[in-house]
Image 1 (tube, rainbow, N blue to C red):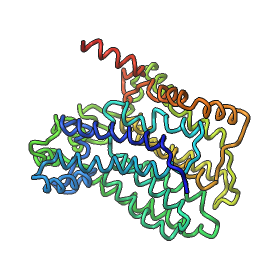
Image 2 (image 1 turned 90 degrees about the vertical axis):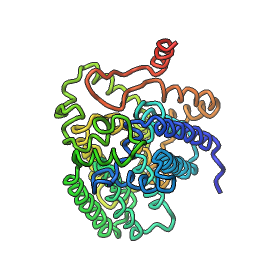
Image 3 (image 1 turned 180 degrees about the horizontal axis):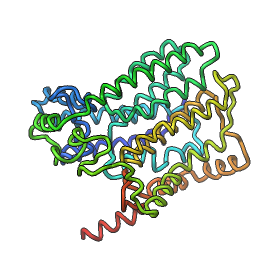
Image 4 (image 1 turned 90 degrees about the horizontal axis):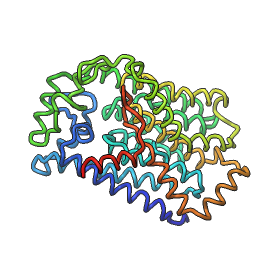
Length: 404
């Protein structure tokens, strides 16, 4: 029997409230991105990213075709489910400084709230799926035969957002760490099935990227609840654009080569600064398990390949902070999963013991310091020319001065 973790309950309750406020604000203001992304539907036939928008559209029949209420209801339920599952996933951990450090990373939970124009986006469905997947693998009655449902559900997630394809290998990593040699044939079959079915869905989506007719019909189908600038700006308008073309009909090929060195330095610093919890975690971790399904060197190579496989996404889309945030979420969940399964443990070094001792004695003060750490720097979710790293509190101060 585990004691309730009141810090986690409070933490996720506060995040839930902020998320609900953001979702409400998006729906009232008909936000082009955070609201519009969810409303891509099949009213002009099958098209990429349309499955959730079609569900919202059909659900709106219950509210006299009020898309706003339907959007707010469904996305709020998704958001609340996400935070509830995170609590279920983390509640059994005996928290020390490094787990607090992990959850306060600027790229983790706070990322939804702090970074403008991020909010509750479609990657939250991927996070929910991955947590459920890891909880299933960590269950006492887990058998790899029962893993098939997740193998077949994942390709369906690509109908929500095809970008999830580039993070497919995060599903394979846990199998390599927990499978026994007797499971090797079944695990290899599941891996190949996952890759083949996901690739097939990606090909299907490629030939149903969307057209100008899709854009016009989707915007018209939303009636009075159409996102602002729907027909020429935002995720719906992007349906009729090529992968390497932005909304201004400009080429996105090698867009990252046009940015200044200051933009590069600021972004790299932001990513490294935000990734400090993962870096420290990996540095202090000890691998306990010896009987891997394949050699350790191959596993570590696969871990590296998991990131390399997402590089095409960085080449064709500007939302670099979002892509790194997805990496951080999935990596953090994966490391926590390995900790649960006792595949890894944190070595009790002198440094580890000292910092844990001081942290537990002054926990409230340290939590405020970690909150400051998670919110101090601000980088836009995209990586383009002239975007710079900013200090969040100075940015807020400047906006207040400008307004009053």
